[in-house]
Amino acid sequence: MLHSTVQLNDFRINTLPYMMNDPFTRMKKVKNIIFLIGDGMGFSYTTGLRYFNHNSRKGLMNPTIFDQYFVGTQSTYSLDAKSNITDSAAAGTALATGYKTYNGALGLNSEKQEVPTILEYAKFRGKSTGLVGTSQINHATLAAFAAHHESRENYNEIADDYFDERIDGKHKIDVLLGGGTSYFSRDDRNLVEEFKKNGFGYTTNSIELFADRNEKILGLFAPKELPKHIDRYLTTVPSLSQMTSAALQRLKQNPNGFFLMVEGSQIDWAGHDNDIVGAMSEVKDFEAAFHAAIQFALNREDTLVISTADHSTGGMSIDRNDNYKWNPSVIRSIKSTPAKIAADLHKTKEISSIARHMQLSLHEEDLKVIQSTLELEIEDTRQTLINIINHYSSTGWTTKGHTGEDVPIYAYGVNRHMFSGRMENSDIGRILFEMID
Ligand SMILES: [Zn+2]
Image: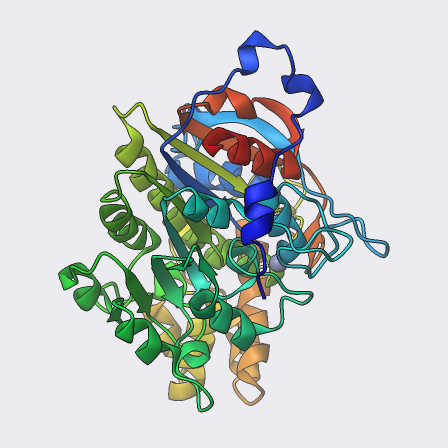
């Protein structure tokens, strides 16, 4: 629970040593902040996207939309006695509050004290606020911006807090778009009805979202996470960029400005699965959302767009077969995630139905191996497909977990220069606080 109105009043950031007396680090006050986090989106993912988009073996590769806004890197490690690789809760907390903390913590410092988040502080300063993601909206990275818990696993309590906790008597979050009906509409409590009673619009599909005109909105498009972009029917489930635009349309109406956090939540999940098809699907969805944010900020002098990752995932590597060749054309030729293909194959029990999902023609032996898994679990088929795709695309992975290398920072607009060079993840949170102070 949040008891931090006093803390918000008292909150003063410690100016970073390198910011003192340096004319190049003077900041302007900023009206609007759009903070986009690609969960797990380390350098190999954005580099992979550049290869993925380049439909040729020859010539210069076109930059991704991220590339032209690259400003610096940040170190992601948490303050955890047992681990020196961060999880999403600790990294999200560092980015949201300016405090590094232990793995699993949401909105608490390493002494387990509640610390205000930039979203809460923006609300305290009279701004509108939004949370947009492709996981359930109460999942770790998103929750780190708007809840305070010793464990990220308290999903129902986090959803309750999104409704119950107020800043100066006002709802903390004005726009919530993502997945998670099962946490908001429960047997013990119906948060959907409570939000509606308090003036929020409520939508569960794209068409309703586009038609809705409420300034405050709760949009939940799946029981938990949304389908990956490549598996999504956009008439039902919006893309991340569509949700970002819907949020911006509403938030921009506040003359005091806004803070919007957007998460590409499942880049990380694809990384945990070592699934390169899912990874490219989610990085592309996230890139389009970043583009929508940049489009909003273009020709304005009052908005900062910043994008980074909370950590990298999976140790993804561009080439694994020791022949100096990564084959993104293999990935491009596959039109569904391995999870969806596996589910479909188990429904039909027909190996030929694989052709619906890929233009790539597999070898006879590969088809036999896949066929043999149809007697087993869906998971066995999914894993077999992942292995085959990694082999032919030559995508390497070192772990099913997170990795500790520094991650990129991209920024555009007011105070973009503040994020240049190498910094700690917690520095980003601190600088954002200072910007709206
Ligand atoms: Zn993760």
